[in-house]
Length: 96
Image 1: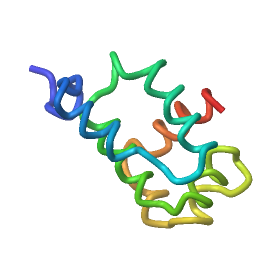
Image 2 (image 1 turned 90 degrees about the vertical axis):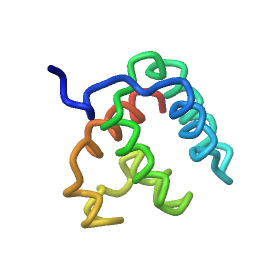
Image 3 (image 1 turned 45 degrees about the horizontal axis):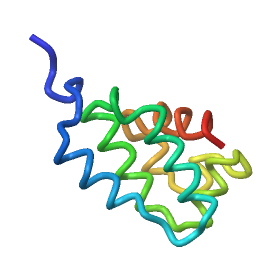
């Protein structure tokens, strides 16, 4: 039996996550929109949670980690240790 965190996000959860990911910086919005175009059909509950955690970063910190100008550890040691965050960050970077 698959673990709940490995299940795909349902339509409602995906919609809420999209809304949560709206950003003030246009660059972040563009990268996130590309991310959803590439991965929304295969996004798991764990990945959705990790993306939500990344959205707690300020716009500037989020942009810096997406563009690899700063490491995740430099902007948030807590996030650096969270399960799935590095995976989702890698997915986001594919769309930069």
